Image (cartoon, rainbow, N blue to C red; front, top):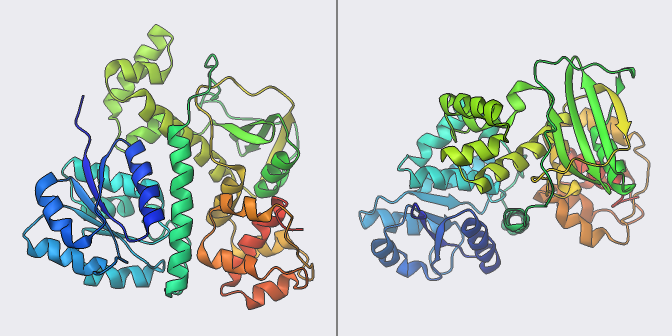
Length: 424
C-alpha cells in the first residue's frame, strides 16, 4: 500500500484547524498539526512532509513571516497559504508578501486544497498546477471560482473562515458516510441518443423547482430536455440523490480523464471490459488497479452534484415529472439541497435573472422559525450573510438590497432563502 502523503498544518483558528485536520485525514493524507509557529521549521525538518498548509492569521507570528522563515531555513517544501481575505485583489497582496507556492482565499473550496496537495505529493509544482487549471478552464481558478467578498476587513475574514469551516465539516460528513446498500442499476442514458419530450418547452427556474421538490418531500424523477440535451434528477423524500445526463462530457469516464485521474487508453480498456464482463465501470477500474472504490465513488458523487449545478444554467426546457422510486445506486448525492440551490444560484443566476425571480421589490421578508438551523447548510459567503442580517420583518426586498454591502450577493441570498422557505 502506498504511503500517505504527509501534510503539516499550521492554522491559527483551533476550530478551523480541527475541521481541516479531519477533512484531509479522510482524504488519505497523513496530517500533523503544529500549534506553535515557532516550532514549525523543526517539525518540517523532522517529518519531511509533502506540503505545509499555513493560515495567514497565526498567534505570535503571521503566516507570511512564517513562510519566509521556512525559506530562510533553506527548506523547499511546497507551501499553501490560506489567506484571511476573500477578494481577488487582497489575495494578490498576500501572495506578493508571502513565500508560498500557492495562496487560497479564506472561503476556498475544500477540493481545491486537496488537488494542490495531491499534486505536491506527486512532486509537481503547486503554482504550475494552479496555472494549468486556470489555463484549461478559467472558472476553476481558486479565486475566480467563488464570488468573493469585495472588501478584506478582518470581521469578514472571520466570517469567511467560519464558512470554510462549515464547508469542510460537510465535506467530511460526505467522505466518511457509509455507502448505501442496494443492487446497482445503470441510470445514465446513451450519449448518442438525442433526447425528445412530449411536453412543450417553457421558461424554467431550476432553483425553485428543486427547492419545491425538497419542501414537498417529493419522491420521483424530474426530467429536463433542451435542444436534444437531457438532464434528470431523482428525488427521495425531497432530497436529490442521483443525477443523469446524456451529454458525453458529463460522463464519469470523461471527467476522470480531464482531472488527470486516468488516461484515455485506460478508459478505453476499462470500457471494453465493461462490455465483455457486464460489470460496472467502477468494478473494472478497481480490478485494473487504476483507482480505488472510494476514489471512484467520490468522483461519481461529485459529478452527480455537478450535473445538477449545470442545470441551473438552463432558462428554458421541457419538464416532465414521474412519481417513480429512485434507482438503487450505491453512490448518491450527499450534499444538502440547500447547498445545491445556493451554489447553483451563485454560478448561473446573474443580477437581472435574480431580480426577475424575486419580482416583487416591495415584499417584506421575515425569517422562518428554523432559519438559524438551516442557514448554515447554505454555506453562504460573507456578503451574502450580511444581507440576511438585515431581514427584520420590516424591511422590503428593495430596502435590504439598497442597504446591503453588495446588491448582487443580497439578491442571491434573498432568493435562495425564499426558494427554500427559510424566509417568507
